[in-house]
Image (spheres, chains in turn orange, yellow):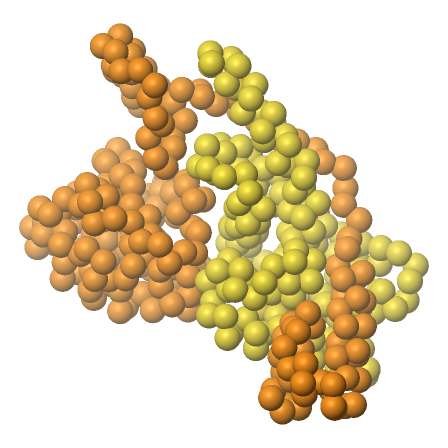
Length: 235
Length: 167
């Protein structure tokens, strides 16, 4: 390790503890390290803002039994009564969802709003969902995409415009990229969904469409080309 | 466990997590938005969203990155909605000035101003590393960057701060 390498490493992370052999014989790097540690102490003090008292927002009641979870809860007992009760709850929840349905101005608005529906989907990870999980969410008669468009790290079915559709997340070059396969949402032309922090598009594909939204600077075109060729609905 | 007890347990869990991480959430939001008022709004929205999604958090050990991811997302949403322009240091609102002039300490104020003036791309990883104690790989994960890019940004951030403070 030479002086340039050492200084670069220490400026990126003053806690860097490599290069001890070089450091012990280099007065310049010792001074530089001391300087960076001092700078970091000042940065830390400056960042340490006074925090206002916590004011908890009004939290809505959550129906604990019906909370959406990423994995099914384990059941200790399986009885017909439990199954019947689940059916009743599901029916009730379904009815409530219908009766309290939020109406969006447009399909684009609903798609953008849906991005935050499940924060867990926005985690950057290198762990893909299993092929079985992906196949369950994206049946073969809908799309043959598999992991070809990128590592799929999230796969759930979600409701968009009253239809249950696959909500997938792949890991793009800039972070998570949300994909919604919308076989029943026919549009005439592509709609730009880009904003200050996101790049995205709603693409017409045959009698349906595909929404693709990533972070600003994501290569949406490359992903859309792969997806466009994978869908099986009537094109 | 009946649903009333479950709801109580759920609320207690949430209160505990928020109690531990509220300061981090607020400071992260404040340095992302560079505005105390916006930070408070962002944290309120983030708390609400975290409450609704709490059951997606399987392991409380992962609560901090989970909450900070929500804050980051809420901050982006806020600016999507408001379409705020880049802030000029000479044209600050009272709420932004409050962020900079917190204590009568000239050296600290100068450092705050220098951090405030950093590009978002440089300021955010610095905040995560110095204040949140994140490793460069954790920053890369949260920001969706390669680790090399994070190292470069951190290196440049410190050099920019040094340059600004030495001027």
